[in-house]
Length: 232
Image (cartoon, rainbow, N blue to C red; front, side, top):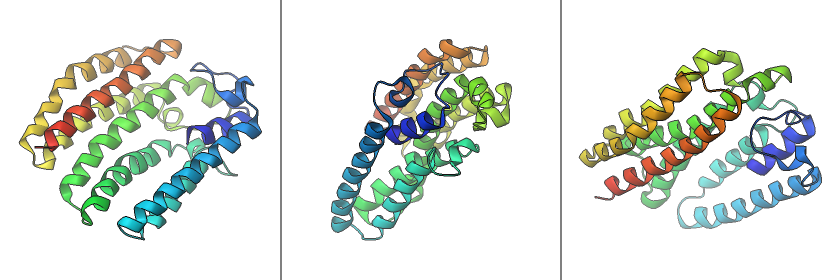
């Protein structure tokens, strides 16, 4: 998906003025054609893996796979990319949270459960948080080029509140899995609180880049603790 976004944003010119890390297409480090090829190769590898997974679980997983690939491309690609309309967070929550978590549970058990869905909300929220803080950082530049991300639509203050809510949701839904050890995820709560305070204080531009990295670390810390708790 990152290759696809890099290519599509690059050819649209929305990455020409960028605060965040360098991107391949816009910077000229790789040609648009090469980045597009890398995206399609990645999609192809994912499809082959999906075929193998479907063969050992359920063939309707192929439908989920096709929808996922189309969603990955349509985020910033095509004639009407939904990432430019403010639906990026919804997509990330759906595919990196619900589909990934509930889907993983299903292919191993061939059943659905409320606990798996609760876990998916936690994981989807943290995945969304990564995109949300990225969009807060790029809000001004995105607005200038007509990229109406959710941060642009909400405005700076509400976008920050939304990000903080995304950091809080995982700790609410983890215990709803019914596993009493899920409260162990609170070990990462001080990390989440520290990030929330800095974002609430008004960090902008390049100062948000380290916070993006720390949000990724938070996701890893929370996920590892959550996985350990659920294994018992």
